[in-house]
Image 1: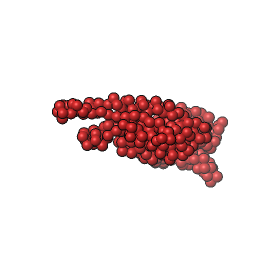
Image 2: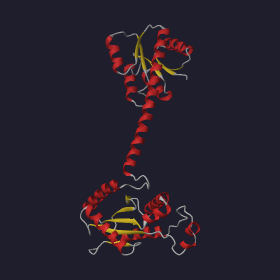
Image 3: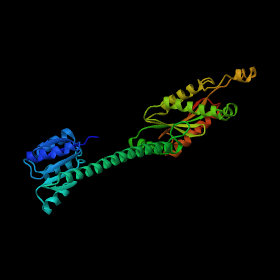
Length: 330
């Protein structure tokens, strides 16, 4: 790596002398005669280090250094003051402005070279550390996002989980009450899921659950929420949706689940697997649903869940594979 060094001095002889020595050490050298030219050159070439005289025209070295250290694009560039001024006040101000070192004229070119080498080594190490910390911070941010997602997501279906559903339902009911809007909830339960699991195994059952989750996702809007309530039960939160609107969504879900097939779940046909005795009893897929609305049927999240669950229970009692809207008979 070839380091770039900017030499800022209004004395042509000193600039040339420093330049020759630095180029012999393998550095790429740039020059500036005053503070304004210094700032412009820094912005143009992005040097790795600046050798800056204190007494330069237009803008003195202290002001130029202060300007560079306040700019996020240049504040990381090490500044070494080179000056005939040897007083404590000048040195104090130099370090207050953010200088890495202070060298008095006349100086030993070899000593200056050693100081530059040491500063560049530290600066490079600091930049590497900074990049490592940035990568670590980015990685931690991604991990936090992943952990947050895991905390609210059902591992099997990738829908939101029961806990997050209850949090969101409370928030949505509060919002609906504030703006006097309707909100509906749909509870779903896969019919005869235990029998399906017993016959086809838990891997097939898991596939069934994931496919139902996919149906739910495909039937809702971006403002809605689909969650796995537990086991083979699912739930939808439908903000600003009337009971009739929620019924349409629930019926769409029911119809799509009813169109499932064994082949679609990655299973062979029953008659091929079990023989002709099963032909008269083909495998049918269905889901039952209960729907209730706020504030028509409930005043609290708990009441709304209970009403939707009662409607779901009625759907099961009436023969399954249907959507029931809550009323006082449920």
